[in-house]
Length: 299
Length: 315
Image (tube, each protein chain N blue to C red):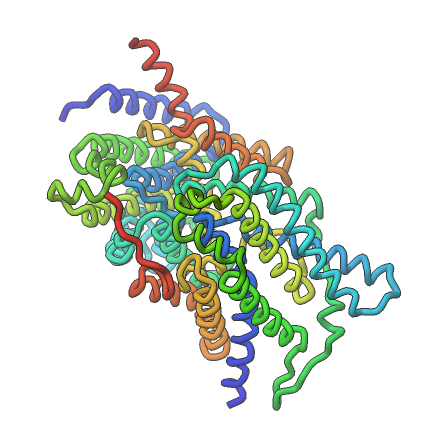
């Protein structure tokens, strides 16, 4: 029973983390049709910014601990904004209109560039910002002790999901965005500034990625290469859910999170296998993902 | 059997390379061996690109080729390098025949992602298997060629080099003929417009299937040769960044000619060797900018530099 509870708790924590990572990716794909390989780098940049800022705060400051949480989020927003604008205006804008698959390769090139940029800016030694993680203490579920920070992550993830949903479905801007998703040309004809919507979407996506990194930073040691590991996981999640669907990403994250937690507890040798196994299985039966739209073939 | 100009030039270059191998220093032979065996994997990527599919998981077959050669010697007593390479190809073909059934239903990014997922599955399995050395992999040594055991060091390096050149030549000629033959031409038609190919009464799916399996076998051969050359295999071979490297080399060379991947792989290896030596922390950045540069300025790859000159002569 305990192990079942453990799977449930671990699974939900892992799932909420996966959703945080995957949300930005799926938003960008949904609007811009760009499968962004550099998303993992945005995650890493967020983690680095947050870790260095929070580390600096605790090393120098005597300020209260709660400010560090604001710093985490602030660092992510700032980093996401800056990097997002630079990348969209400086690189992607010049590349629009190319093949989807070529865009994947272009963002792969971007990933390579950003990986080394991070090494130049932050060096190769690890950064730590564990204080916000330990500060919150733990809660006991029977025999299990779970970090409150991890539980808070579940809450943040749910809020973020709801927020995204509300933004897309309940605001004017969301409506315009859905129009762009549905048919870019008609949207342009109706007077929608698609370029601006692209910039907004992309910056939003990068910020979400950076936020995921920043919120993860206290729980890990931030080292070069964390983005590379994360990106394929995020891919698996959004592909399972259906590219471009936020609800799909949530379901994909839950599916992957729970199955990985189950694998870790019952059959640890299948830990990595299970994630891609689930993905292949879903794609075998639903090629467009669980919530993806089926496209008509063009002649 | 008649050989055309390309094939004769390839053969002459191969002979020159083998002779060159006897006088050149060890490090250069090693570099060339690795570059050329990777070029074979890239040939697999290029074969699929011709049909419009970009595989982000060619590392799967690279890894299968390498591990089969390694395991053949380690566990099954297959010490003959040629037999081990053949076994690697056979395993890759079987795996590709199974995965191909599923993969050929997908195009574009879905094909890319699913092929990536399969290679990550292999990565995941290898990392967790203690018998195969987990993340460290294991060494590949004590192999023979037709009963002859080359001594470790320069001797065996020389042997792998010669084998790689010969394998490269044979594969290059086969691919050259393949692309000129009906199936190769139709593969390009599938890239241009799949539905029209279907209207012509052909099944794009089975074309892509055959192409996928063929590409897998070529890549596995490259993996096997790499394992023999480096004397080591590890799960990193199946990691997605390795596959990314193959795509990079493929785009660098372009689809214009069967020799392009070989040239691109050599350029890649030379640049990499020197940049890791001199600018270890900006190596990937150089790669990234080069990739962007190739996409924007040389969409047909390095080969277009050569062929452009040629077409200029004719007019």
